[in-house]
Amino acid sequence: MAVWFAWSLLMPFAGLELRRRCRRAALCLLLIIGGVAVSPGTATAGEPMLYVVPPLAPHAAPSGPELANGESYWIVSSRRAAQHRLDPPHCTLDFVRRQEDGSFVGSHAAAMQAEFQPGVPVLIFVHGSFVTWEDQLDQARTTNRWIRNAAGGRPMHLVFFDWPSDGPYTYLFPVDVTVRGERAEFNGLHLVWLMSILPSHSPVCLVGHSHGAR
Image 1 (cartoon, one colour):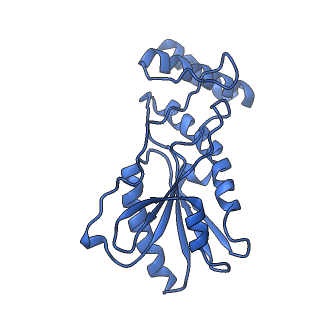
Image 2: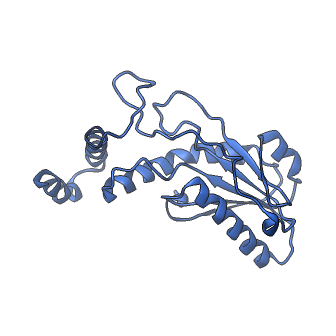
């Protein structure tokens, strides 16, 4: 506790690079002490992968007649993609289409590209930290309805970019927030790749909430 107190007092006066190194060292120590599983795989010897994400089945989503409103949108998830520069290269994103009947179906990038019409605006919404996959499904439904009501029937394509902003947690708020801030920055690479496969003549609007704005 005394070490943590001293660290919190001195960090505001340290340089940016020193603060980053201290945060990284503190996070490694906390993950070891807390028993959080860390993958042994590395791209460079001696540095562990800090961002471990559990397996995801994105198509396993609730559906029902009450959700069948005739609207469709896409969720593109990076939860199973690389989350750190030292992770083994893996840029595969999961594409999930919300069907007009309210169900969710696993798909792929080519299907989304084929559906998007050139010239029609594409809105990409990026959620913030501490959002689970189940939270994303609920928030996407609500946000889709809100945006379409505001658009007054104008054509658009909606994409909800999903990234691993939930656990594992150390339950030390400054550490957990710092981890998600750095993870959000890294996911900008996946977001750029997603934007690169959109129709070249379609306007793109990016909306980010909290750490999603990074």
